[in-house]
Length: 206
Image (cartoon, rainbow, N blue to C red; front, side):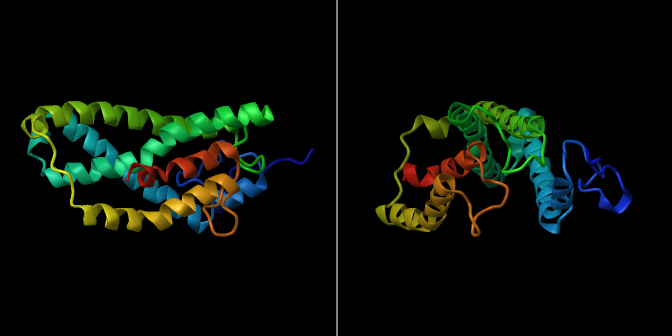
């Protein structure tokens, strides 16, 4: 059996230099690419922002944070984490029912436990932020919530729906038929494509 490559200086793919969870030469090479390294850096930045938001919502001084900061961060967290919370759970169940196996991508580059750990961590983060946000909003803006909300103007609904249409159509297409050459790489199997399909949910709510 051919021996798999492990830790070798400049060939380390993870930002911390680890090859844990990788099972093949292809997986090591892919996670060392500029695209994935940049994605990991962006993910770290977003994780730190989520941690900062969680701390602010759980401390008394967090009530003094400008409202627009909380709304922007919480809205971004909802858009990113809600599909991850629902998508892999539903997608994994569908994939197991259809194929009898759970694969993280089209090859054996990544260990299945890595998929569960990463997406499971994002799902728990989403649940935790949702619970904190619920209590934070009730505590800070209860008087605003007591009154009936003012509906947006019809033109705002139309503009918002049209702005979301290209993204929603693309994610639905990628979710149903696979990303192909135009979609996000590494999202070929059912358990991951379900995340793409659910990411189009904002259009459904319009």
